[in-house]
Image (tube, rainbow, N blue to C red):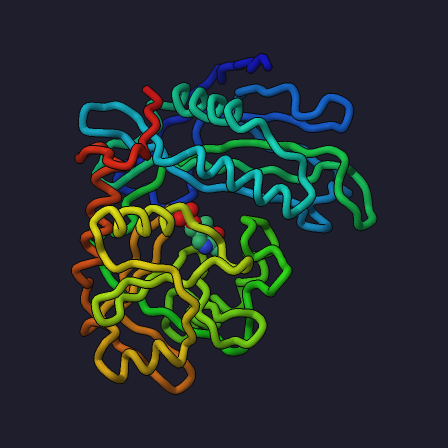
Length: 354
Ligand SMILES: *Cc1c(COP(=O)(O)O)cnc(C)c1O
């Protein structure tokens, strides 16, 4: 397939690198590609970043048939640009698409298009410590049609956003809120897909958590509301009596690539690390008996988020005196060292761009 490239005539001025935040600035170009039943995925093109004019009947606006991904490009100290396990994101995009009846993409082609886009925008990859270029591939249902069915046509786009350090004031624990009133996903639903509606459905619980002084929601399973699942946009790990555990994938948990990488690293270091079904009561008991040593979240945005406090009903669990635990720090350092090329890449996770 032939990728056409149209360069922007007027480049934007770059934002202040010390004030990037997350998801507010976008680069000069984007990747676009369309699907129709006659030609399949076709017309791949890199062109100037621009708004998408849309018929008000466009199906994604009404029925939420859309999926997305999130990954980052990192600048190394020698100025090279590299990606962390990008094929994992592309495969997950296809798995999410399958769950939403969206036609799948050629994975090798999408990876090469993504790399070309990042290469064209290489000057947008910031070089301040712990900054990166966030990459957001999205697919949406584009038929102008009212009525619930899968769309016949789709648009895939990739946009890029330079993002700042997640911990500008240093690596700090967060406080999370366990909700009994809401669930994120249910058995047989789309919890394991990165699909639009999951995030819309999480907003009310997040706002309630924020109002109570907590930054994220820890979700329990949607059937019995006993089993620990994940946090907002992160998976979750517990260190109990020297053993590291994360909830096993059950169809309603998003299979995070950072999660998978932590499991692989821990195993490569011969740690006791495993996937397990665990209830909130077991967690509370572990805390009461003094065995709950650390909790941390994993996700592309923050890499590792140490958790200093959990609120469940009337109970407030303080973890590790509210300080960052040694394993959280070890995984954070190991992963970011690989991502920024400060260490070897022992498990073959880096894909270089330029
Ligand atoms: C994206 C996401 C994660 C983390 O996945 P990574 O691949 O590690 O970034 C976890 N939970 C949810 C709900 C997510 O959307």
